[in-house]
Image (cartoon, rainbow, N blue to C red; front, top):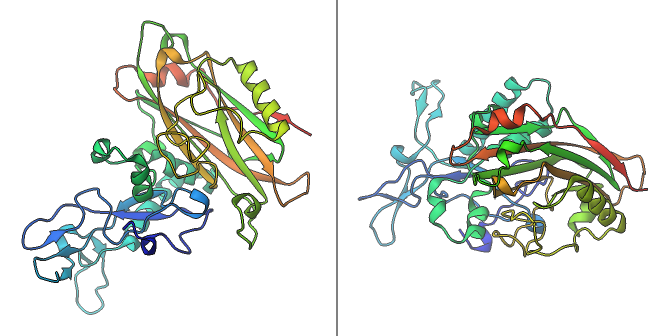
Length: 368
């Protein structure tokens, strides 16, 4: 699975579509043995990253796995115990359901089903938000906590297994804030969002582990040429957040100065004081997960765990537009964004504290 021939290929390289990988349903051991244990990558599932270090596949679902025997060379077969349940044609008298095939072709419809349920929950929202919520809901399976090489995990599993309940619901310990409809942004424009963190979550004596997830989903006009990631899209977007010790006004001024000088990618450092330790970060040589680039794709997710007392009163997110080959100053691209706060130990009821004070609203800043 790590050979170059096992890398994802077209059309799965598409930056504007969700690519789905496959994982095993269960383990099979004995005369016939499965390649994958439960929730591990299927033997046939291709790996990332995609073009320019983009995270591909973005998510995985259950597509089953092959089994092999003890022969030399071993034979391969499909066993119902490790195959997904499929709908079958009854035209020739066969059963209406069966477990007689495996493949990513059967994992992808499971994600499409989640998209349909998100659409049912938010019928007036855009497909950009549906994509954001699918990616936002994804988590790595439990076995990955023992894997030290997180960079290898993301190439096989992407952001993990999506969950429809997480995508469309909140709980006492979990809240997702979303943008309202598609928001349009131009190159050299910055949208600033502020999430108010209530004082009872910031008390110095408390030390709750709060996981933050952010997913930005946008679309832009592509070119036929693919020489560089930036020249491929008419306008490309990225997001940045405030530091843990940074006031809202200071963050806004810092971002505007960096974007105006067009030095955002080179600014800062991996160990700058107060910088949130995101898993992926802005550069492929920063963060716990290396060799992938958060800003290269049209869907950009990252996550971090922060101690509750480290938050400032306002947690800020900047969505930044960069002009590329489309020189029309009025050209704009749509995006949707989801921001999640989760008390990972379920030791503080976070929903009631954050939901009351926050509705995600945009403040626009022009840099002409």
